[in-house]
Structures are given as structure tokens and as C-alpha cells.
Image (cartoon, rainbow, N blue to C red; front, side):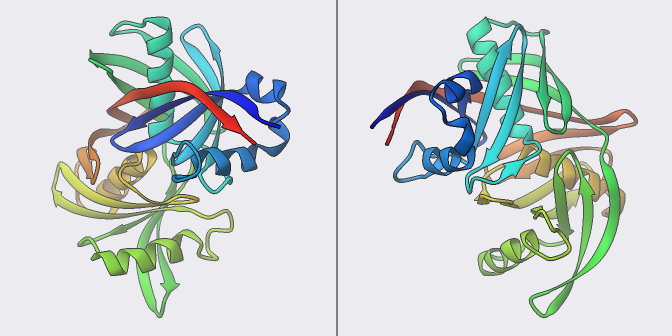
Length: 271
């Protein structure tokens, strides 16, 4: 038996997400196997392809969202996924610059202000809330002891400050840190180099996904770690392989600015 399911796809700097209305999943009796649905849809060669699946329910200038990583595991928040959903809302509801979108996530309600529209790209400044649990930790891993900044920005983050690793070291230490016993639920991992007081360059190993070209929460965490432990200012450009996002760490929390665009809305056929 084949099930037809409406799916939208959006990305922010190459970090891509699939969107399915939660009501459609319930109607097709898919909510009981959401993890399987995420794995099937996110598969790069046999599915639509994506770093994560977001089940959502729309309202006027807002939505609720539930996020699953590509491996089917649940996640609390994605800064880029949040902004992709806001772009979908803006596209469907014909929003204009200055409009504000509110999204209820597992990590709380987030607000995003639409700052600019350029073709299919929607730029938002998202209020992610304050970071929590910021500390430095000595982590024994793969025969070494790695100094990392550990914190939460709505989801768990482990940021290793210093020169960026080469590909071989990144491919070894990224997954080893992400699944380290220090993090029972796993963690996102960033390697971050403070190139200047207002500029940080990162590589990302995302929990449940692997290497990604961008991460909104990873950019936010790297900026906080760079300011707290790396000598950076509290307003920085964070450069990932997919592009640059602006992070402001203010007294009332973290603000993340970047763009997202909807790629396609269509039908997936599930068997």
C-alpha cells in the first residue's frame, strides 16, 4: 500500500529540512512511527533527502514544531530548522519585512523578526533565549584529553576552540565527542577557530546527522564559547562551510540572523 504525503523542503546555507503537517501524519497513522518516517524521508538516495524532519502545525504568523534528526532521533531545537519553518510561514502567509513569527518548540517558544526578502530567501533575526550551563570540560577521547566548552542553547553543544582540524581528525573526533559518555543524550559538536575578535570559523558534526554545512544553534554555541573562553566579542560573524550567520549574545539572550529558503513543496510516496 502506498501513502501519499505532502512534503516541503527548505534549507539554510545547505542545512536542509523536510516539513510535514502533523495533521497529515495523524490522518495517515504515521505519528506512531515518526522516527521511521524521519529516516525514510531524510534518506539521501532513497528518500527526499534532508538533515532533519519537522512536523508542524500552522497558525497565523506562527506554528508549533517537533524535530527529528535524519537518524530518527528526537531533537530539542534547530536554529536553521526554526528559520526554515519561518520562511515557509512567510511564503504561505505573504508576510512582509518587520513581521514577527512565533514558533513553539520543545525548547520553548521562539520569536523571529523578518528582516529582508530577496527572491526566495527570507532573512530572520531569531531570539533563541539565553545559553545555559556554560563551562569548560576536559574530555578524555581517542587517547587524548580535549578541552571543550560545554553548554546548552536549547540543545546540547560541545565546542572545541582552536585551529580547525584536518578532515581525518574531524571525521574521527566529531562522532567520538558527539556520542561520548559525558553526553548521555548525545551532543552537537563544533570545532571553532577565533580568527578575529568579531569573526569565528567553524566545522560542525551534528548529533544524529554527521557533518553539516551549517547549524544555527551550532553557530550560536560557537559564538558564546568564543566570547566566554576564546577572547571574542559578544557580536560575531560565524562562518561555516555553507555561509556566514550573525550572532549577538546580549543580556537577554542570543540573537541569530541569517536566511532560509523554501526549495520545493510536493508529494512523497511512502510504501
